[in-house]
Amino acid sequence: MRHVVVTGGAGYIGSLLCPQLLKSGYRVTAFDVPFFGSDFLPNDPAFAFVPGDIRDTPALARVFEGADIVVNLACISNDASFELDAALSTTINLDAFEPMVVAAKQAGVARFVYASSSSVYGVSDDPDVTEDHPLVPLTLYNRYKGLCEPLLTRHTDDGFVGVIFRPATVCGYAPRQRLDLSVNILTNHAVTNRRITVFGGNQMRPNLHIQDYCDAVELLMTAPADRVRNQIFNIGFQNMSIADLAVLVKQVVEEEFPDKAPIDIVTTPSDDNRSYHINSDKIASVLGFKPKYSIETAIRDLCRAFQDGKLPDSMDDIKYYNVKTLKARGAA
Image (cartoon, rainbow, N blue to C red; front, side):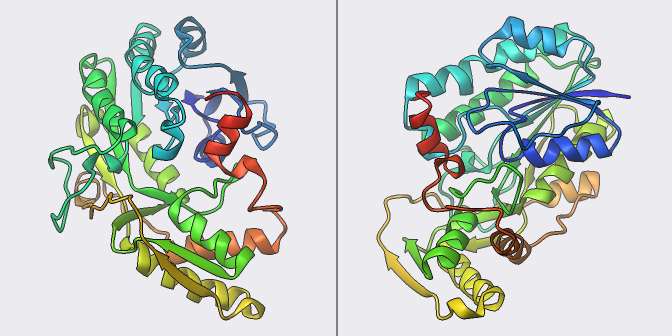
């Protein structure tokens, strides 16, 4: 049974990825500060949750002993959360990264999978942003995501394989739900308030269903070393403007909740000008990966979670919102 350590395993992605890896036959350890709780994590003899901070390199080193693979998801996630406390976020998203890589290598880990971000591209008019596009970060969050990439490849060799992926904005339902990501925000407002507010609208954003994200991670964990060593892969599916996302959300929510129709769309100015259209052909040609789940699927998944009572108090409960939770927990 191969052993994988998922840093940030108690987050939005980790809450879906860890159970998936257990089903695939891995022994899984999640290492995370449980700002958002941990009661949603698996109850399985092959699973362990170790509360910890990635800035504590000795603790990380102990967890990495005997591990075959590290999947690094841990960070202060997304631009809004990062701006809460730039110094705190710098120590987590940048300063802690290279010591973590070194600790993994020294522990005998064979593969390190690093979740960067497609937001490293910032603003681009290029109709298809590929992996060799210049990085134009607009915030410290996406700047540090990009700066960590060469810090990994600096330490890789034949016995320590590193692979980097740049995922699009994630959407859909997971056991530890986030409602502060574009599709999820729009769906929550449509279901709860029968009204969607679009900030700007013309910005292009790539999107990725959370299940496709998890499937891609598992593929990067298992793909032949010579195909992924020191490689960078964009992972996205549908590139859509925020305005078009709002229209799609309106249509799907009105189908799933006929009693809520009509749902209004209101447009207001925005100072968030991040806009880019990523191309994910490389991972398709090199590894044969193609996303299976659409934005519409993510919206319907969220609608069913609302229908099943899985997202109570969705506008006010801080557990769905990174910024609010970090403030309340005194992390920022």
